[in-house]
Picture 1 (tube, rainbow, N blue to C red):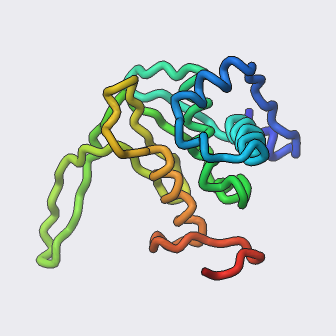
Picture 2 (picture 1 turned 90 degrees about the vertical axis):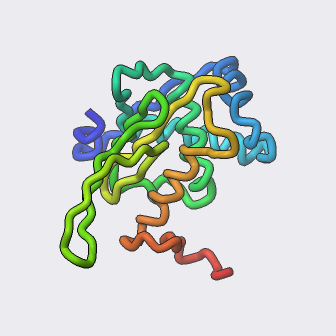
Length: 176
């Protein structure tokens, strides 16, 4: 439906979020407390647009609820708060796993030998494809790691095609 809306030029419907839900979800994200009132309002609007433009899927039987989706959207939108959602325009999917998950890998070494292994990860961003995230309830989350912001920073880095730690920057942003 979202793809059809884009093709027809119809704006996707933004979800309605009650004040109690904003407070409940934002209370789980204390790093948002540094935002000014104007930036908090901008983040909320950006998160609603993000929710309307992306497709979420629970993996391995994980049922996604509205609080989870809102928490992911708020965190995903923080890195693009002042540059806009166009930075995330080239993909639509977000897959959320219950906890860490395993990705089969295959690499060929310099001698031409293929090595296959299973990589246990917390998240991954695929160029042109989905963002894969782990979701932990309560105190089960790994300390000191924000998987959502980390993976969406990778998506920003992919915005100029090369995964090199240098995301595409808006033309009007002065170099550091």
